Image (cartoon, rainbow, N blue to C red; front, side):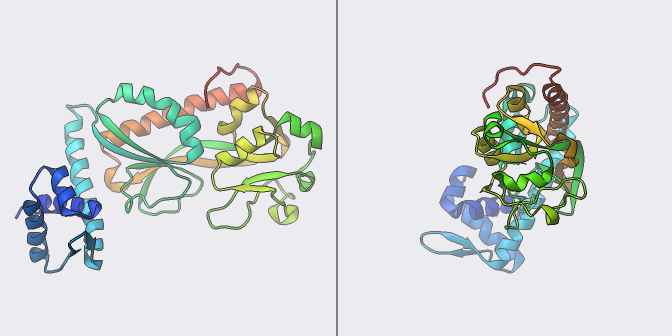
Length: 315
């Protein structure tokens, strides 16, 4: 038995929930696919799949073996790509997970440049504000903001971002501009619902702590992009990453407020499972993302300080 071949067949059957679909994708017969899995089960001495006339499903042992098989197969692929990397261009499927706003405002507009440089890399880009388990969900590389919550990852710090407070000029003309964080209690606030639930919390320098401010949010959103769009529409005040609102500020659609009450923002990092951090496709994406963020930071500083003009771009 070729165990790696049997693993690949098992993984495909488990992912598709069907021997027939897996066989078609692997260009083998249904009987061959069934035989590979049966031989693997006999070798292991456990049943991996429950079979019915309509579909197949994982047993408890099968679910655990699927998780381990995916990791092994990914490591084999990474090993192959690493050794080929010195004599061939980066290639293969690269699964990328990024926050929704980062993806829309920074990554997606830059992807044409990346695909021109590395045409042999296939991208699976997932825009997601949920912190996913990279190993369990087979993600090759992800962008994270703030402290890392998952151990066993390799991290590359990209930049320290700034958190700014802003609102549409029309809103400020109607409701007045807050002079201190205490004044926010008299305004409509737009925030992002924490992943743990509850209400958002905005931090300012002491003594303006969340406990003191006890802010009420008129609107909460499940994605960082929501409050930005709401603020541009004049719905209220929001507090967000400078990279995401710089162009709106430069065009006069948003105005920065409470600038003397800013705190240093969190770090933005690129993270990847330790098994895959040396693969050529991950390495070139990491370098590309770091350069992209550096260039974007330079642009943002110019836009926010008024030392450079913003070019028109569809957001």
